[in-house]
Length: 254
Image (cartoon, rainbow, N blue to C red; front, top):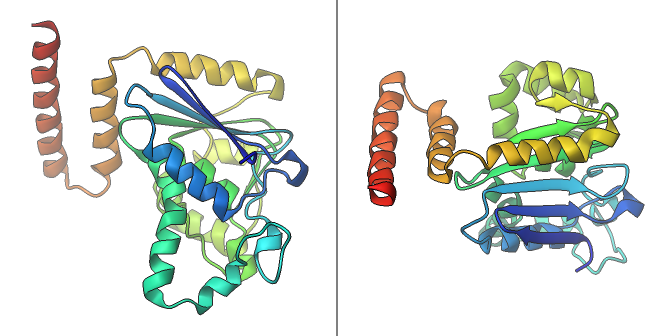
């Protein structure tokens, strides 16, 4: 396919949405390709950078796929509702797999966001661990305006980042969240000028590659599970993680 540029260079993998003529609108075929890329990622990859070609990160699902015939050769989204549950559930799960691998403890993922990040584009940015954005970045969870729900894994990280009430307000109103507000809310880690986006992402990537990979893997796993554990259970998880690290360090340097 030509809708995605996927590459691996040592410890860094890159995902570039490459449909600038439609603001990098997404298709289920792209989600399937993303899922396959994530599943086949080499073990040495530690950082994944996700970006969009051109002026926008992603305008979300290609509108031609919402209903009726299209020239993309793909099934319209609304026609999926006619499928029995035992067919629809695994199909949506496969779509979600194109996003969920970005949260694996083995990697840290960075979304480089400029321009529109709408619907599936917003959820792709949320699937990443970190978000570096430009001043023109605009986020919107547009699915409810189409009578749908966000189903690509974006609801959990959104609530984790900004809390239930604000997440509900943003989703239910489908309003725009501009870059400055995104930074204030914690959706964006940093806002940088467009001409500094690539350099900032590279600096962040280099910094993330400095610590030992096992330590980062265990730390990310601890943080991902922290909200679902009691304090005592988190302490227990920390002890277990540290014991594993000490054994690994002894094996490596002992």
